[in-house]
Length: 114
Length: 114
Image 1 (tube, rainbow over the protein chains, first blue to last red):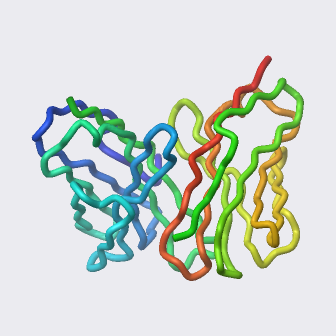
Image 2 (tube, one colour):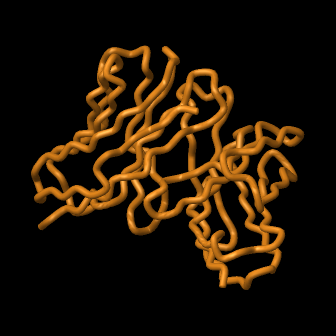
């Protein structure tokens, strides 16, 4: 079973709709992240959380919100989707106590906003 | 914020040959971690190799090795005996020792020619 899962894997929505992308992890890590990937731009950080009570904005947080429902769950919401939010979205985890500070990624969610 | 630069958007290599992917980064810190991630067509982000800046010895993982030049702020990935399964997008990433975020380059698309 995958350690970091994302649902849905693919989503098509319309401009103005609210959508939520969900991430769950079984790695027991305390830190969770949301990135978006666009061609030619690499991965850019949207939000990150170090525990349930800690939420931080990343490089491109405008138009997004997050919720850390539990240590293992971190969801990303687009309150009113727009076409330039079409992208590949990744959830990632890492652990404060982990020796080598590696991030582990989910399989990604491909989002298309029409 | 730290910046990570991958100056080669695309590279190709003959099967069984060796290829080197370049990465440079900008930082004023002395302790940090560097990573190479692979993203095959399945779009999963897979850790290939990592390097701690305080270690002088270059990291190796089977056919993958790095050339870490701390003074030059360079972190290149060498793939030996290239295989068809190595075809993917490769991302270089930086994380400071005490920092909270990972910084990714824009990626290098590697094609392996049979």
